[in-house]
Image (tube, rainbow, N blue to C red):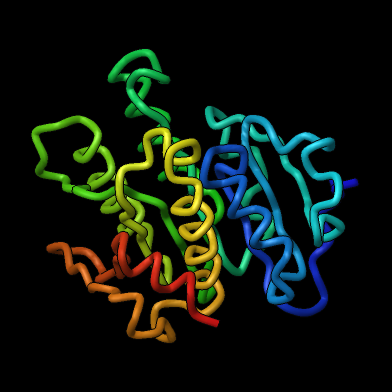
Length: 230
């Protein structure tokens, strides 16, 4: 059974995962748990992975589950988890959110506020699952929100910030299951090594927004190629 304690791991790195119950997030969670690199994996969200789903999952003994209220992040204790790495694969669609206003709240505000709540004054790494075409200057709601979210996360000042911009993920788990699992593998690999140690096959590009720190972007092909590395 997953632990509900907050005891820090004695060795190795700890990781905080937001969005673990989503289409990509559930695969990221399994990859994190299966990797010997991580000694503590904290899953935080409005709901967490059900116990029956975790049956037989390798590494589930190092999982800590934390139910949080995104409207009250100042008291949810994400900072107390002291995560070495924060991975955010949280997102939604306008249709699922019910309105453009709710979409922005979930897709952008919750993401940025959660990353802010988890930030420490250490060499902490942040990874964010964005989308192809993300641009703060886009005329369209979805790519504009993703672009603004990237910039909002960048402004928080994490020591290392890596963004994934894969191909469209609508129904990907059903129509492109391999793409989802490979994306999850590459996210976890990047979380482990950081931007300075990414292999050339990842094709990481440095983005330098005006007035903000540079960050690193991995596109669809790079993510798929990164997943194949050992």
